[in-house]
Length: 209
Length: 144
View 1 (tube, each protein chain N blue to C red):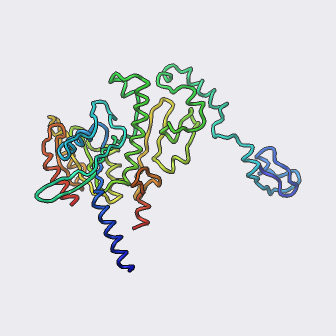
View 2: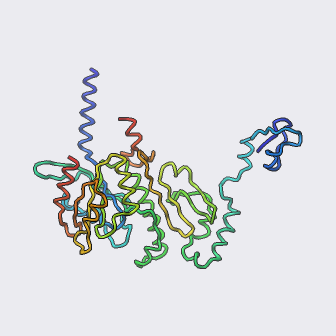
View 3: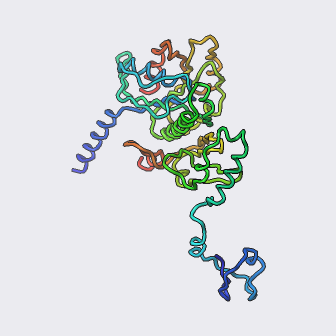
């Protein structure tokens, strides 16, 4: 009787685990293209975008989630929940937003919301099962945020795939990104043009299946 | 509040703990209940915070990015506040200890700029997470 109950319980747990899917978090600094990539993935897999993008840093100030996205590749299926995280920064200065024509009051509000977003993103490290770490390949990858967040993800034994984004730009330097973090798998994409998105899906399937 | 263990006299100055009671005893008892009752409700008394905020107002350059005086005069944190450490003025801090146990350190300086200290320790997780799946890594580990 006890064995039967245990079996039933295991079946229920398995059923709900399958239904829930794994949580894939998109992490990175502000303006590296996390939401652009999330939109591209969401449109490809579900036909609907994830959220708004903007040249002003910290446009995404709350964790956005899209459930039950399925990647079908070579007959294999991978169901996941995509979490687009606010950009992580160690300093949020409202004066940086003023140059985009935002009023002081709105800039201060944006800074407060952005900081709350950073805290949420850091706290969500305990809720994700895998991470795409997005790096702007036109920028220097050796930053405090990149190193610290990668270390935090690594410390939690969460699988990481580095995504070198913005490869469509002339000053993109993929080699610099790969050399900065040689211990991690890296895939280069352009979320803006959709270049090598298939390569990304393939890497996600290999990494998470 | 310190009291002499022999005669029960309350000390007037803290130095008396070192020099001893006039009765000759050097043993004192600390009465926490009396001390808590005598202490102000907050770490930064409004009377102190206000003049310091006004001092800053005299500095025209700093004033440009400065939060209103009401922010500095406020000696408690509200649900609107993201920060758990507030620099009221130079050398004067207000700390939300409860929030610090749940979130990374977020400091707001008197220019209204936020600084976040991202934790960097193995197994460092925060106990109270929101949402239906809100379990910390520590809790997950316990159940496993």
